[in-house]
Length: 211
Image 1: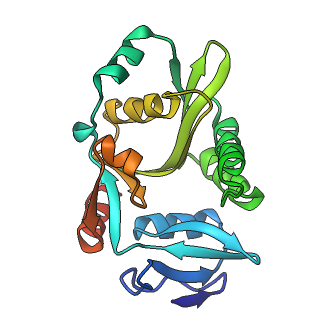
Image 2: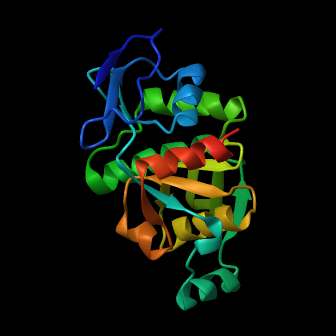
């Protein structure tokens, strides 16, 4: 694990702790974030003002063609209960992700510095959101970084049942991406078709699809 200053680059992404921690420090500037995502690295949280950067030994990914949609979920989609937009309320989505996580778990890594950094990435055209609406109320969504044909999912939220699933299904059906980086293993995402692969296999996908 390496300590970074604002000028140093990342070490080899394979040189992590067993949990996947690669480096501490640096900043959340656009250049730093782009370097990270192009290298298969993501910032997970900040502590005492320091950013913690990860590249886990096992990585969860989702190929859009492998998304699993249950019968009940198909009924939700066909009901047209929700409408879906892209990049119409990025600021609201990231702030809602932070608020919902904080309410449900008592903590969130999406602090003010993260929010400002990803809003800047959105303004530059690298960060994107999907919004799920019930009439005019934002009830779910997700956001992440898009590089080439790779979408690096950062977070999602639901204020009502199934709203985040609708956002993920919309992302998979958009045909924009060859794969979605889901970062850390999640039973919820595995039920929807995501799988865990070794880091070396993941880094090959990053190299192939992120340009």
